[in-house]
Length: 263
Length: 265
Image (cartoon, rainbow over all chains, first blue to last red; front, side):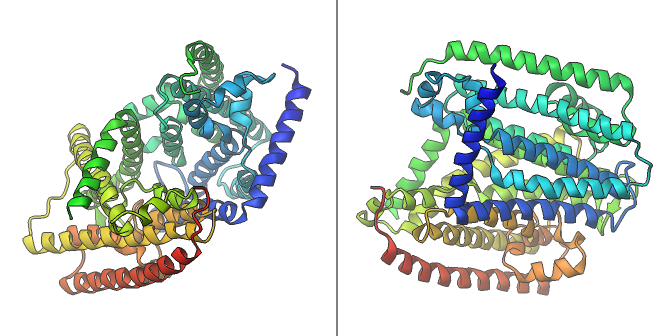
């Protein structure tokens, strides 16, 4: 893959997206404010909960807030850069995916990055600022190795998120009528808003091994808090690589299955 | 009435046409139910209560919300009205012998009923699997008042949602404001948590807005946490907001019709 070429394409797509957002100011403003309201209310919920208790599943207020902010960081990163997947069902249904296949560009790259959510890119700044503030307020000393580990696991989390987006695209090819797959992932991600210890062991196992939301969201946070053992770190890294590889294999099989029925 | 019954039947049939989609849609609700159940369960684990709610009350709150969301909000993300106005599809309704308001009410009613049945089944299955005790209200007066408040909540939500969709008459960008409205509604209605856990500075203003009377208020009646007089005052608030929203809807509808150009036909 020619990185320079793809960066140029991505830049062009971002420029188109920016133009679109600027020309639809009411709609963009509505979405942005809606996201702020959602973010603010959940933060308010966590703060309100801690008016009645000192700990939640053994975590202090700022530790729980860190889980919530990390969830937001990963969720917003995915939405900012891979928003195109939300249009994929429409493309397949209306046969527009044929045109994507005929372009001299990787169809997966194009389908995922054809829309960049500028609003979410802007939203990344306050989230990052709040993460720094929360880390400063934590009741423990956070070392540089923890911060580095956090950054690495955010990267690992993103690899799994990309893999899930690829799998959602595959499901769309196999079942054109279905438009909810990516939304199931989005709702599953909300599990990461709170520490995983609130769930039963069975639910934790499902969200670690089957739908790896805990690996995506809780592993970075726990690494920052110094609570993740090296065995789990290795597991997280290996799991992400395997999950990504499997998603690519399924994508290739799905592409062969694509029948262009709607075109 | 016969024509609206037909609208209801067609909408009902359409829901079953996209079964896979419907199944995934419900899966999304189950995940939210699971999350909220465990959040509140973990908080009541130590003392058996949290923020003035016993464990059984807060778990019943979560399960009741799942049912009420289905029947009151229906498919909340619904933007059919916005799309129809923006794409000029709305023009055909002007030539049809139907009232667009009632047409949409019955179109959405089928979807709400199917979601309600599904939500009840989900709650029962969940309660069995997780071995959860749910508070069963046996006082018939409370149940009657609960039924009235749910009916009024359905009407209130429909009018508010309809009004937001009518923004499409004035702008092709009505979906963004609808998204904002949906999230204010989600939280302001108590669909994620009982509003009373918020500090008074947030709780009191919320009780003067219409949203709190969509989910929080009916569930509080069901749990028997409001007195007879508080229930009456709440129902008066529901009626007041339906009238206010209905009046604004009527004005917006008339102005919107004047502006409508059938663009996109």
